[in-house]
Length: 361
Ligand code: NAD
Ligand code: DAU
Image 1 (cartoon, helix red, strand yellow):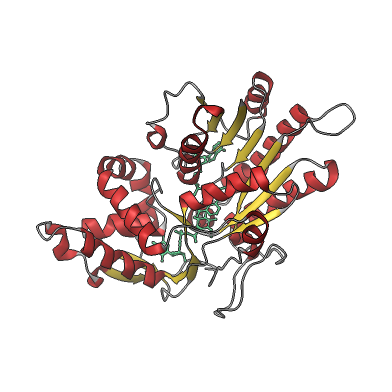
Image 2 (tube, protein in one colour):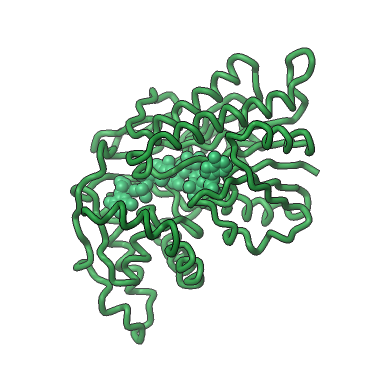
């Protein structure tokens, strides 16, 4: 039975990936999820699988060398899928240091421990071992408002925020291990994800939650920044395909070919909420464009991201399967069905963060 070590599995994409993997492979795989449970880690995301005999949760920080080395010593790990990171650009602008610690130093610990455990005396690596580093399209910088400009795997890195600079550094470390040691790894650079379990400080869940509560919908700058949105399950599938069918040492860009301005996203959410709520629901009365509030722009706000997923389509046959209209309905439906999840998340740390972030806007 193949054993996966997933880092950051209690976060948004990690928990969706774990669900996807158990749905696909059932009892044929074993997953060890290591997560420090920062503000973004929520074990409620994994409530339905936590009692599976082939699932183990370990609370540990990826910067803790001893804890990570112990997991490798006690388990014959075949695959590492490395999600754990500080992931929110706005937080990185306020407090960059923890981004360097987790994203750069934590990745170095993961690479060192995997290398030490998988390396043979002649410097080669045990058969079949693979490390997948989950990264972002933000490392490529910002594109002009020209619909023919895309990020390719060959696009030079040009990160702007502390978050993207830390992710770019971690990518470089992985590349260095591949070049220097022939360490068996891949890197994936993906565009913006949305879907169930996304923490409501990110645009889509924040807008859904605020609209339902009749709160203002904060739009940074002119609202015309473009992001390329991908349904999270399509990302989970791509990661699995890269690890199973991808060529070692290669980078794969993953994206939805679904570019939208932020203001378009907000209007689609408002329309979809109106469509989905029954006429008897009193919230329908306040869900409209009057909630939209233009606020101070994000510092250094990248204008446009757009992935060209040509390589992963051509070489591995991966394509996004979820149209945005369908994905956003599924996401809203999930939030309707998980009101308690949202309540639990929006109490506690998130609330303090929200006040800190938006009190002057
Ligand atoms: P998230 O913030 O929802 O989850 C991050 C998880 O990592 C949390 O469970 C958190 O507790 C854990 N974590 C943080 N610091 C840790 C540490 N020091 N040790 C152990 N665990 C730690 O993030 P996400 O949106 O699920 O993103 C996951 C990965 O995918 C990140 O590497 C991110 O850069 C990348 N990515 C995200 C997106 C997106 O749109 N969300 C797009 C492309 C790539
Ligand atoms: O592109 C991939 C990246 O997507 C990932 O690497 C990051 O981990 C992930 O957080 C996401 O980063 P963004 O900064 O693009 O996501 P966010 O949801 O924070 O913002 C999306 C866009 O919406 C961005 O242009 C800023 C804008 N925005 C965001 C918030 C939270 C607003 O206008 N208002 C808001 O309140």
